[in-house]
Image (cartoon, rainbow over all chains, first blue to last red; front, side, top):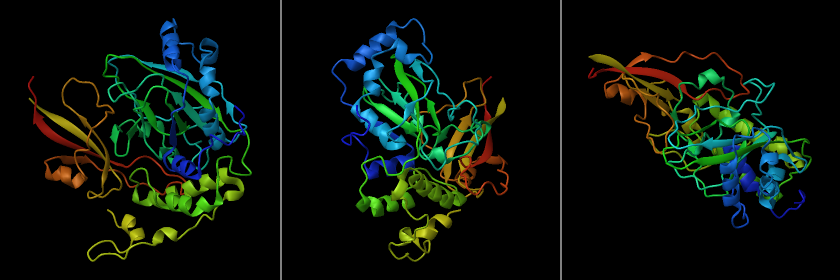
Length: 287
Length: 89
């Protein structure tokens, strides 16, 4: 697909959602039988090919070049994005246990070297079969791509408020910020769950929004970036997280950047007797 | 035989009344560690609620020094609680 084709680009609203939560799900209209073809090829593999996925599974190229996939990647990373070395076929056999929460490591980077206010690297995860709750769906913590945390601080974390499970239909593609906290969960079913993962990166900074941008949407985008919190944040994290969301937009939006400060979210209904003083104070007044 | 049942609660601040955003229970028997699971409900809204239910706090989260003001850090403040339970040997 031509990466400059605008027919499958994300909208301003979808870009805002990705910035806030750190993931996007695509359901490409794949050819009939495609997912089954991939599953059959995976079952026939004598061993995991490691990062040589395309060589071992040439049909996967049709997915990577699908217009809906290309449009999403071009929207988030710019049209000059590249597929990085690496990638992995995850086979989650029946009756396994969950992985612990983690961020993927990238060679040469420490846990402090994260893209907390930018979208430079993505992970693409393709599921060639339905994934139900008992088949070990990938779990994500929305918004966690903005957290800088050493791996040892995660070891006691198990079930977290706001965690989401990627229960998806066959052929779905989950695209995440490369730094989002995630884990494969336990497969309690009698079925194998496959997932094929590829890393992608940006090569150029944007001078204009590479997605389907319309300047008239800026106020709505701004309201969402100012007010939506995908998980409960610590009291002192609200302002920092808010600033990081706006900075992420500015770092990918080129000339469509917006002022860092906004007071629009301070509006709203008058406070009620006995409660917090204003909508903006409410978050600060929690214990 | 009496043994210590352990509950980790992660709250959004060091306050006992702060919302809890994560938990894990470690049973005092030979068992696999707790794991991420679909449909699990956080058992207490606050650490204070857990105390009212009979849990004792055995470890309070440390006061954090000012971190990097440009970054959001680890997820929540970790309280560790215990409760002594009778276990069949």
